Length: 288
Image (tube, rainbow, N blue to C red; front, side, top):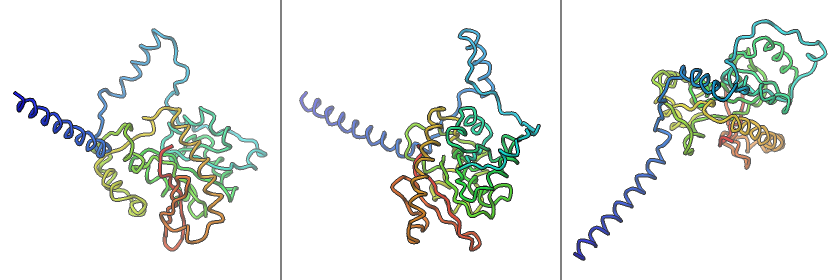
């Protein structure tokens, strides 16, 4: 009887150790475990409508972003000014969200999307931005193949800042931000796996092998999966951190500007030698 009890005791200890190991193992590969949607996005308007029937109208829900093609006339005196910084989002929805929360007023910055939102003032705002040689450019994007190419488009496209010697700050979201997280909503898509395999070579240089494998497998995390409070916090703190880094950058020695230089503010400088044109951007090593 005693032998049986002792055997069960040892078995319990062994099982406990195995469960602890198994749990830690799952945490270490959580970024490779997708969480599929259990509903269709088209169902959400119906759910919202039903909720409003019982509880009243939800006034803080943004309507779908619409193309605003009718140009707005801006006073010539206003056009003479510029902005200290610009936030460029990879989707119109995130740009619309920041504008609706008056982020542009609170931080003296323009807010645009990479596809030209808001369309009715986009060209005018770009003219104003290019008047400031000390403009600070911030990219804010999802951890998707499209998102990680945002910086490259901003650096090289003539529609953006191609040919300008500007430092661009990458606020995320990058795959490296997803890996250590325990609570990000990871989705997997065959379509995005195909896009991941077509990421330009110059963008691949800025990503680790693990990040490329993750994207090429079709994993991704969207900014829309975070709460509004979290998104505003990430951008606000990102601007504050990069301002501190920029002050140090101007007086840093040449040796500190090598690719991969990391500051105490959690910002990593990534150097790019693009056809002998040295450019660089700062990428946050954490999300918020």
